[in-house]
Length: 227
Image (cartoon, rainbow, N blue to C red):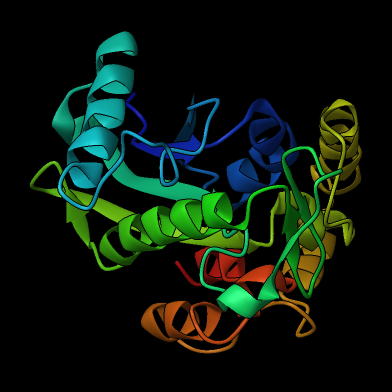
């Protein structure tokens, strides 16, 4: 029997894998899905820059290929999924509050103790996403595409924008349980015009980078169905 081609999926956290594994296996029924869970946001990491972001993603891919004993010809494509986290919003949509711990999100603003910290994070994340969203190949010849949930995964999948960490896995399991064995229902959900951005891949990226769209409930994940 011929060896199945692998679709590698890079995600930020374990909740992403839990929520999406069943649906991705339905999309790529004749392929093997392998997740690379980064356990952080590589696009906003302080060590990630416009100069090294492509290299850092390449190293993630190489490490997973080595761990799974994969050769280049075994990998069909690489799918990278990111949360937008309001990376492209106007600075006037960032509000300071001395009582705020970390970043607090709504669909109109980000609240933080230090506004400059949000500005710095957003600039770094936006620059890195600008590079990754324009790639068609990585590691020289591997097909690569970047897809987004905005403001984050829970926002799109559950319409909850600011989810406590201890709820994320629970919500992810609920989503997978609902759609893993009902692919038609998943297709209907993920293609919902209230959040599924219309247009080809490049156009969906142009859209999410405009105004304060990167805080609002949008996604281009549905484009995987066309592949």
